[in-house]
Length: 63
Picture (cartoon, rainbow, N blue to C red):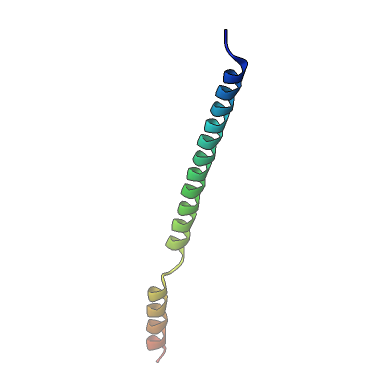
């Protein structure tokens, strides 16, 4: 026969572990989405040194 106390402890332990796995899984997915968003933003916006170079080139052409 199963001791009710040990059965409750086993269920509590299982619930805690499952909750931690879900939490870490969501954190990993969130981090991946954030990195993807940052990569897209970096790819679509000019880098500071490129923006300065294009401004300098435009000023040189205007002369």
